[in-house]
Length: 176
Image (cartoon, rainbow, N blue to C red; front, side, top):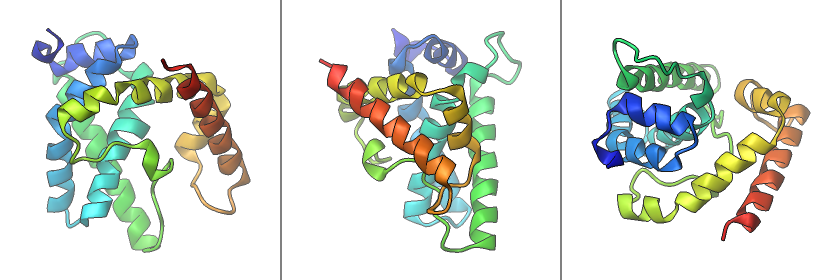
């Protein structure tokens, strides 16, 4: 059973395309990451955004960088490093510009931290579509979405986001 696998084994499965593995990791860690962000004085909304970014923008889209040879600290350490680094990044952005929005995609693309695990599993087709869309866009677009600061003046980012959303729409149409 997949729920019995270690974090490392689930990350390896996710790397090989098993979307259910992300759901299990989400159930295991979403509330922990949320609580950690709240303990760092993040608002509910910012903590919720952080959790979504950890799973979607970092773990989900960068899983191909995860080293499959079993690391000494394990998969939990890799995910916590992502969470802590994102908290530092978000804190710096807020300190320099309190009105900065750090979301990468529209809110309706994400699943809330409060989502029941059963609801998340029912929604796995949408995660599969998002994975499909991410793989459909070019590596150049993925790099832009990862590294370029989103905003109204970022034409490259807006164009890459539009291509991603178009690919997402096409992938959703393919989902039975």
